[in-house]
Length: 267
Image (spheres, rainbow, N blue to C red):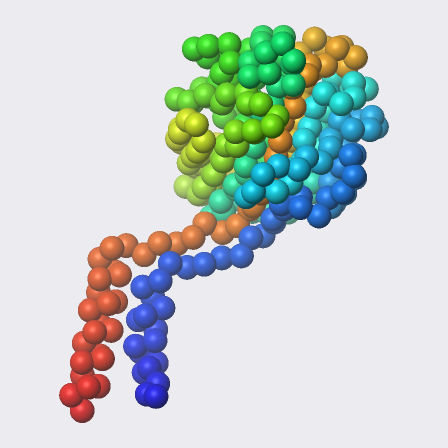
């Protein structure tokens, strides 16, 4: 078998999408027991058992981690499940699957203005905060929908509460890019609704994510009166954004490869 010439091999590789390994990745499939924290390097600021718990769900998610006051009333009015990081965000993609569940037996598919709110956030030094907020008080066209907000900006889509037995997962995928001194983001949401958000975080071009958190706030302000809802999180990844070659460059690579192959055949 003839070997590809080095130049031919280089051109072939140039036409492929660059692949990258995740700098941080977690699918929670090895978590055990009814009380999640502290496992897999995660910590929680509330000493109450079972405010973070492991939930088995259907493939492809297999197992997720839940956060909320459904199983136990928290001791604090804001509960945060966190994991330390050290990831420069420019040129990275942050991706997470999540679902919002309401176990209210009267109306399990709905949220109400008095229910707890949730967030998924990246934070770092110098006041860096990037947050997805799922909050009944943000409004929406119906009481069973939650407005998506990122750094205070309302998106053109809504997150719906779903039933525990058939959780409706959403995926948030965010690309970060440094432009001057700012950190630009392009966030895409996939699920029963699709939305895209773009924005810029001034002065954060070199931001380093020092922590990822999933949190919930008790709406009533009284931990003993937490709602029946909780959030599932799964499949968290932070990895370099794949570089896809421009169409013209790919065509040129294929043409060059074809010409070199033809030339070798003629010899």
